[in-house]
Length: 56
Image 1 (tube, rainbow, N blue to C red):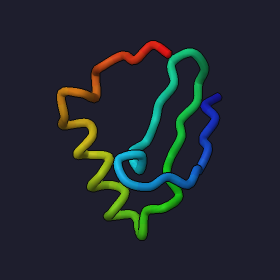
Image 2 (cartoon, rainbow, N blue to C red; image 1 turned 90 degrees about the vertical axis):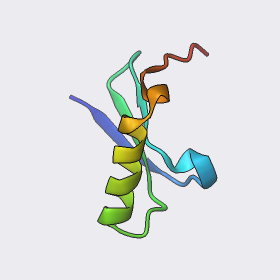
Image 3 (tube, helix red, strand yellow; image 1 turned 45 degrees about the horizontal axis):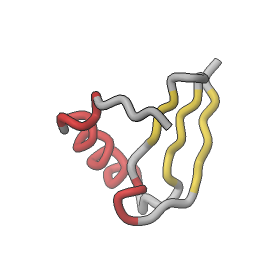
């Protein structure tokens, strides 16, 4: 099962966050509509940075 959380984010933080240490997906609740969300999601997947692994 994957946990999905809707959170308030602004600016660059409006992109979805995916965590591999647990099955969690954080989606911003600040998108105006589905096309806005889809555009940002596709933009994120097309960027080279989407495959970076950040260790906290």
